[in-house]
Length: 124
Image (cartoon, rainbow, N blue to C red; front, side, top):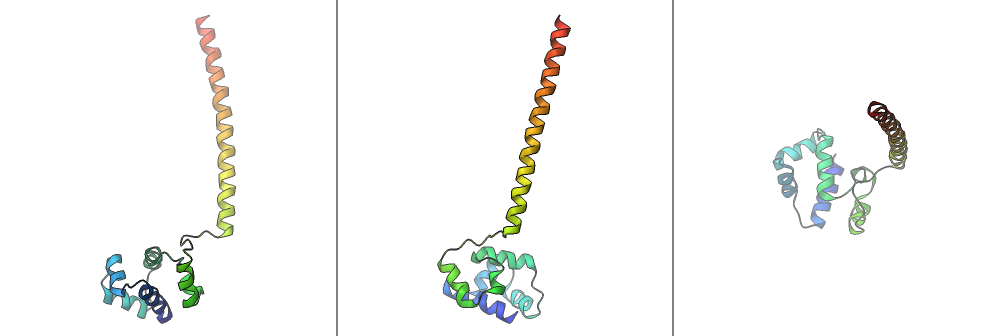
């Protein structure tokens, strides 16, 4: 976790921000945030908030060396990324939902047709 806090501090320094500024933004006092890193008790939700605040994909804190991490900031790469597998699953779900909508529209048309026929019989 020491590497993680060092990476965060380096990113903050590149933006002329302090660790205290980050803690304040998160609504956590600085000492508690430091202790969470030191004791390896930092919650994933807190890391997600840090990721969003710094606009860096969460996985990059663990995978990329600091130099690459800082480069991704300079290149303005999006910080909210979806894996290819997640994207494929979303596309499949979208296709299924669209197919269900088409079927429901057809069912609605059929029922409206039945209602129209019944109205005609009642009037006739």
